[in-house]
Length: 289
Image 1 (cartoon, rainbow, N blue to C red):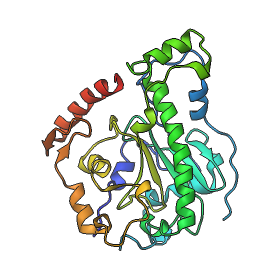
Image 2 (image 1 turned 120 degrees about the vertical axis):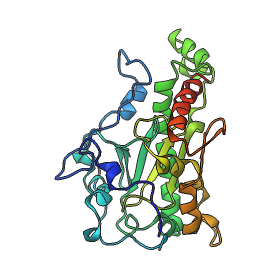
Image 3 (image 1 turned 90 degrees about the vertical axis):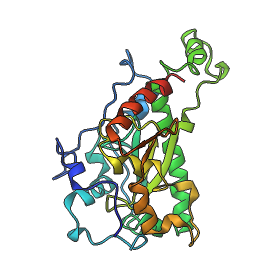
């Protein structure tokens, strides 16, 4: 049996984040950087959007009928069909996709890209991404969504970053935008991919910063689902038929692996609490790079 990274208890811990009866789940917030005195371009990108265009209507098998699923497993469908109902969570809606903030973020930036095509959104990613035209569309929309994620990561971290200092100083001095020195490449800190065994019924692509710094990171599967081959980059699709990442036994084993720090590669065995403390330290070092 395929193991997923999350189960119902992960979505029902302390507040009703799973949308019910049109209710909007709370959006994630960050306390990484001091609050801005005024709105800027990055803040505008991440601000709520009021309206959205309407959509056109074993591991690689389509998901079961939503009637047979727990309510939380089908929670993404409301965002796909009615993104205008969730202005605090939806960052962008196009005819092809909806981009939302993950209500249970596992890192400083954690977004979900949801395809709106009824032909594809009920399929497992392995199956949906066999459609070359659909895959090309998802890669294109994911690339632009990653730019949005990188911009917000930069907004939050650049006040602390040594690599961003010269650019920040130049901006403060009023240097024209096209003459600014290069800053830190925050796009390189954004990862785009899917889980081999998705927790939710509808296809979704994770767009996530690599830091894993979040109070929502609570157990082994949460961490290993993003830091082993269980996380499959969208850029790797289409997969070859003999790719080991398609095998259920291989992916179940990934979820139970010992913990390895994403940054320094230190091994923590089964000591999750120790890993969490270490991740907090690494985050402080990473944001100052």
